[in-house]
Length: 201
Image (cartoon, rainbow, N blue to C red; front, side):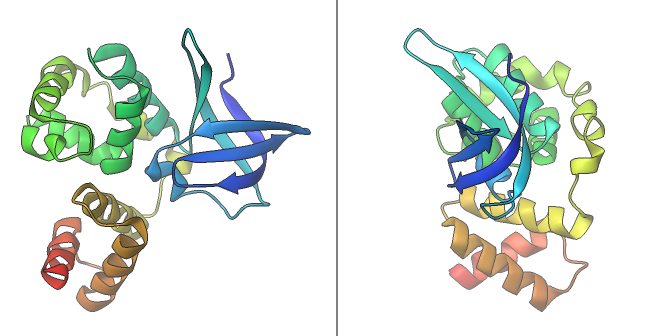
């Protein structure tokens, strides 16, 4: 199994990357949450990976943090009806921390707003994962060195929330940065999102 790639980032798109590892080019599909953490192409990067073997293809999925990869594995291996594509959508639409909170609180509404996740799938996620979110504390702890600063994490969570609500990625980044500048560093994720939604209304 390929557990990680360490090499030069050749190409980075919101949904996939190409890496040069000792002269071999690897393509990996990634969630938006990992794309936001990538360095510019040409830089060295370490990408945690998960290989999914299908009858017609071997597909490599990449993640910038262990919590993201662990959640991907949990979704694909535990929740019936969720494959790699929907798992990537979930990671692109909500942070690992927010996902844990939504599952623990039975927040079907928040989960069902993620692209590709309807109400029935959201309900299934809550039922099948609720007893497992306690163990999910290891998601953040297992890779604390990958963690963002509190301010960066707030911005990231707010951006992902807006994308899940239909904003384009660049637009979401711009309005969140503007809201943070306007409200100050102490603004919560919820306050940032509210301010952005008011501005976009």
